Amino acid sequence: MSTLAGKHVLLGITGGIAAYKLPFLVRLLRAQEAEVRVLMTPAATSFVTPLTLAALSGQPVHHHLVEEEPGQTAWNNHVAHAEWADLMIMAPATANTLAKAVQGLCDNLVMATYLSAKCPILWAPSMDLDMFAHPSTQQNLSTLASWGHVLMASPSGPLASGLHGAGRMAEPEDIASQAIRILCTTPYWKNKTVVLTSGPTQEPLDPIRFVSNGSSGRMGTALARALSAKGASIHWVHGPQQVFEAHLPGVTYYSVKTAKEMHSVVQGLQGESDIFIASAAVADFRPERVFEAKQKKSGGMAATAWVENPDILLHVGQSKKPHQRVLGFALESTWNVEEARAKAARKGADAIVLNQAGDLQGGMHTETNRIALLTQEETYDFPVAHKDAIGEALVHWMESHWNL
Ligand code: C5P
Picture 1 (cartoon, rainbow, N blue to C red):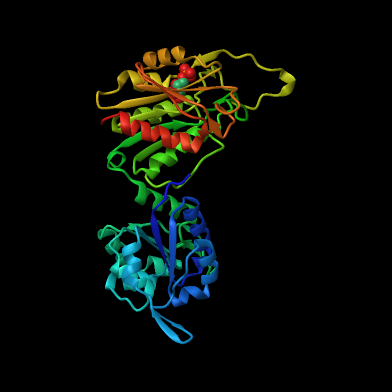
Picture 2 (picture 1 turned 45 degrees about the horizontal axis):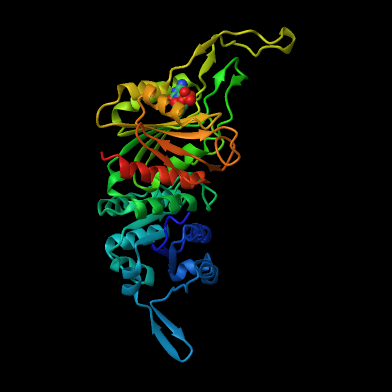
C-alpha cells in the first residue's frame, strides 16, 4: 500500500518516556510511503537518539533552533519546516508541551515550528496519571480540541512510574491510523455513515460447541481500514473473527456471536446508514435446541433440527430507503455471474461482490482475492490483489458510482 505517497509528515518529539516508541511510528508512516521529517526537543534526545530517527526517516533530525557546527552556525528554519508539513504529529506530548502550546510559548525548535504550522496537528499526549488528570492539563487538552486539533486518547494501563491509570501514549499503530485518516479523508466519505458486517457467526450447540465457518474476517477488516482512512463513520458489526483491527478512528465496534445477534444490532443501526456492506459469512442455519450442559461423548452425537437464520442482507435490502445503498457479497463454489446477480436482485442489493470458494487466489483462507463487482447492468472485473487493496478498490468504486 502507498496510502501516504507524496504526503509530508512532520513529527515533533518531546521529552517523555514514550519517545522510545516513536521509531516504530516513523517506520509505519514510511511503510505507507510518507515523507517523514523529525524534530525533537533537547529533552527528547535523552529518551531516543536522533541517529535512530534519522536512519529510519531517511532525513536529518533537528533538535536545536540554532545548530553549532565546527566553524559555522546554522539556523534551523522553523518556518520552512512548518510550511513543508501536510500534518504535524506531536508525540509523545508531555504536560509541559501541551501547556506551552496553549500559551504559545516557543522556547525550542519543536514549539517554534508548531506555532508556525498551518497544517492539521495531531497530538498524542503521554504523562503520568495525576499530571494527566490535573485540571490544567485537561483544560489545555480541551483548548487544543476547540482549535480543531485532533487529540489521540491516552489509554489506561501500566505507566513508567509503576502506577496504573490513564495517560499512556496511544500505540504507534493507532497514531498512524489517525494520521492516515487526517491525510486521506475525502468530502464524499466524511459525510457518510456505513454499517459493515464481517466475519463468521457462531451458532451454539451447547455451552462449549458451536457451528460456524472458516471466514477469517480479512475482507471485512480491509473494508473497515479503507473506510476509516477515507473519513467515514463506520458501525462495524463483527463476528468472532481471526483477522481484526481494534481502535480504528471513526469506527464504533459491535461484537456479536450469532446471526440473530448480528441481525438485531444491524436492525438498530439501519436507520443511520447511508451504505450497508454485508461481508459477513453468516451461518444460514442454527441448531433448534441448545443444550444447557456440555453433551457427553458417551451419549452419542445428539440429533438436532435446524432453524433458518434471519437473512440480514435480505432484510436490509428489502427495507432500504431511496437514499441508502447496499453492497452484498456472494461466495460461490463456481464463478457464476448470473447466479450472483440474481442473488443481488432477490436480496435488494444495489451491487454484489462475487468471489469463489476454493480459488487459490481468492475466497476464504487467502490473503488475496479475485472479485467481480456486479450491478444489474454492469460487470466490473478487478485484478487479483491483496484483500487490503481490494477493500480500497471497493471503497473507491462506491465513491465513484454511488452519487449520494
Ligand atoms: O445467500 P448467501 O449466503 O450466499 O448471501 C451472501 C450475502 O448475504 C453476503 O453479503 C452475506 O453477508 C449476506 N447474508 C446475510 N445474512 C444471512 C446470510 C447471508 O446478511 N443470513
